[in-house]
Amino acid sequence: MKLYTLSELSLEDLLPHRDNMLLVDQVLAVDSTRAKTLARVNRKWPFAQDEGVDPLILIELAAQTAGVCNGWDRIHTQGLDSNQMGWLVGIKKAEIDVGPLPYDAPIISTAENTHVFENLRETACEVFMDDVRVATIILQLFQA
Image (cartoon, rainbow, N blue to C red; front, side):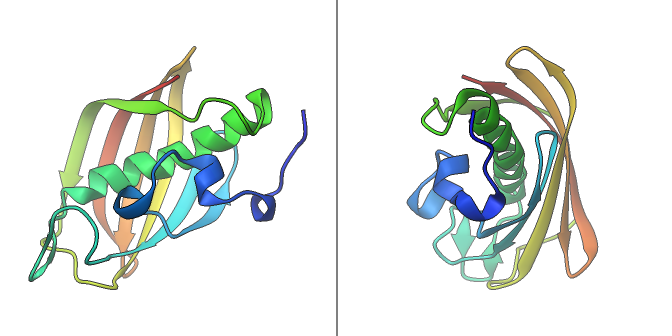
């Protein structure tokens, strides 16, 4: 199996999301158990309103950050052309401590797989805006 570097892979290689549903702009770090991403709040995102984007979108951003590390692992164990699909099947915890997200604000998200059993994963995520943690989220994911 070919081992890829981060510069050889696109976001579309790592995630199935496209168009307005692809929230991540850049992968800052990734390995098979954790990822760190950058996203800029965009008017095209779901939940966009006049005053900003509803912070509920941070759950999806956390799931996509988790998807980056799980996509990385999938590519390195099953190949680049393997099935990208995965599902967010549970939100075990979501503490969001911010109001509407201002447009163009940089959002840094981290995700780490804390439990893995076959195709199921529990992932701990933290989301930061202006170096302040604005969300702590624990997700349950299923990878196809």
